[in-house]
Image 1: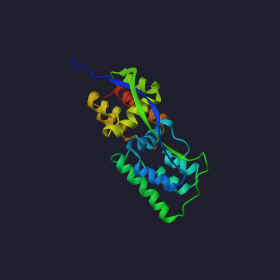
Image 2 (image 1 turned 60 degrees about the vertical axis):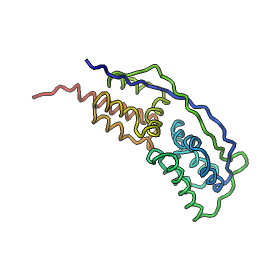
Image 3 (image 1 turned 90 degrees about the vertical axis):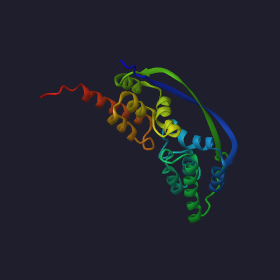
Image 4 (image 1 turned 135 degrees about the horizontal axis):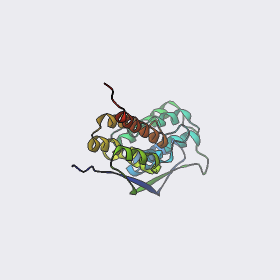
Length: 220
């Protein structure tokens, strides 16, 4: 009998590092985005989802522009930039710069941020460690998804898309469990549109529906 490879749930924590760079205006923000390292860009966009969505923003840049400079049009444009739909950090950088350049071409330079409200560029390092939970089948997977730490959902569903282009959950369901239909449903959940809690609910609903169908008694 072939042995099933269990899904090992990992958790992650981050160590924050300051870069020493800061911006008080949109132009300064633009110039720093053009030159900061990929790790800083990743921190302010992809890892923003680990915080949970705050208001209508989807990254730190949009949040700062909206709240500290009150430039709603640019903030909305930056929030529409999906870091999980582009091919790498350099493409994401180009999209962010394109949006800012277009804004600066049509609108006058807005006011400078008040002292103490500048945007500070940081970067972070992920520390990944086993959660102590694993699943050998979909029933165990369902229980784990309901109770696992939010950082595990983030690591396997959000960050995995940057690491290898797909989330870890659907890959395991497809390659180990062999349930292609469920894998497609899991993969179709949009990480850009939902919070971690909503991703958890969608995962649980998809797996529960799949298990329920398997348990239904077929009548002739």
